[in-house]
Image 1 (cartoon, rainbow, N blue to C red):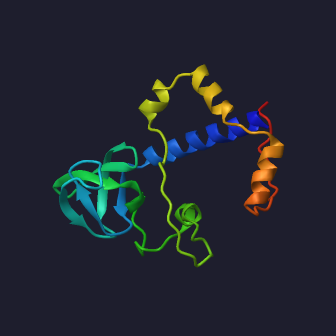
Image 2 (image 1 turned 30 degrees about the vertical axis):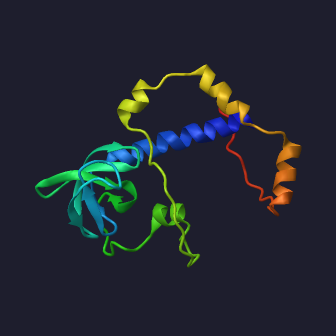
Length: 166
């Protein structure tokens, strides 16, 4: 089971990295601010409007360095739609809808995340046995997990695992 989980995580990382850097342009999904640095409290350079076309330069954590018109700076990843602008910049559709929890639920939720690794980071990656052991040390016994779930009144939901690699 651990092997299947590792395979699924590796597949997700590889797929998300190729999707992020396949396109170098995009548009603003919502109004936001262009910042001088990739920090929420950094100096605001200008206001950005939903639907505005941008060019992505690089990324740092949950931020894109972008160029918009004659200005460049940093904007939150979750404010950017990769690729061509849609008819409605405020509509949550496709993968965004699934990742935000808004697909057909009508419920407002908040999410955050990082979209993946860039090509240079993938090329520079190397195996680290100590980190793998550390991550595996966080595993708990099945009985302990069942007790924890029962205390939180959680319900089991079965799903199919990916097939073993050949």
